[in-house]
Image (cartoon, rainbow, N blue to C red; front, top):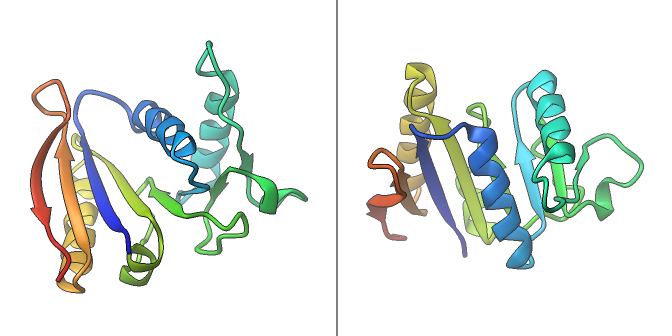
Length: 155
């Protein structure tokens, strides 16, 4: 049974934090689906992942290709997990469900703390997931480093 980790971004861009989390997820042996809401954002993210980090490479692909099933990181707008992801990272307020949190190793929700709409969506997601009995943690970088600000244990 997994948990949902919420990342309230105030110092860094979602793409930067996502890059760090993807690296750690791959080191943990997880397959990841990065779920966004717009093709334009996913295309921009794809380009960034090809160019950075300069000292490494994060293997990935955009959903809809011939090799989706073999991608360790798949950028997608769908709730389908053709790469058999064990971790979903939600960006742009993409939906996540209590069933996913329960079934996967981890669900990460990244949201821009400077965007009131993104904050409202994240609050709704936190409420939905925790009321369904999912374990959740809320992390903020407001102080300049990541700190756990809240935790909801699994019911």
